[in-house]
Length: 195
Image (cartoon, rainbow, N blue to C red; front, side):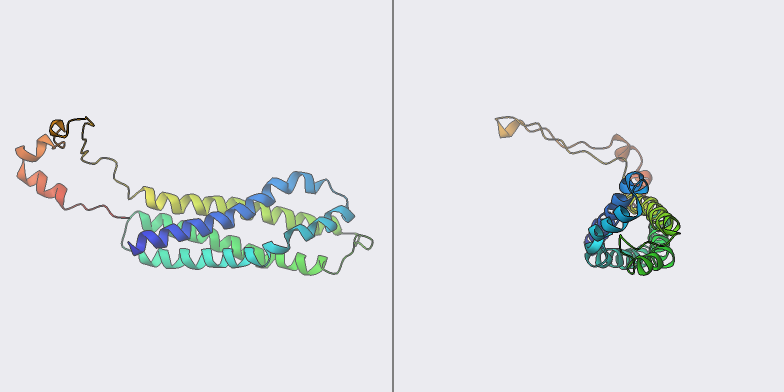
């Protein structure tokens, strides 16, 4: 139960983190057509991305890292979890290497006083955020796949026919191979699927 809960919160936080990055990706085309004053003026839209967003992203990365350790003996869930965590780590590192310096630089600008190379700074900021969005999508996808690869593709189905007469409820489905081969049945019982 603890692992399921941990996976749930990890996927929720990674989803929120990816959603913020995806916003940047969707805004890329129009923002690349802005003039310098408009581009700098619209940076104020992202104030909460640096506070609330930073908490979400760091928490998602920490939870994914712990999740990787928790599933280290569960193959192939472990590989998908590590891949997803690596995508999140690279996206986070890209922010520090490419976005943070731009944020520091543009904090000194005003719409009236722009450097001549402002488009270079804009490109670095916008395209790094686009790359981070793609990494976030891959990271979230891998974490969801880590759960799906552990989901059994077939199960014994117990079906009850809903009737008004409770005495006419059908019996649960039983695998016919179970009675024919006790060894096969014993082998099937050894596989327990948990999340």
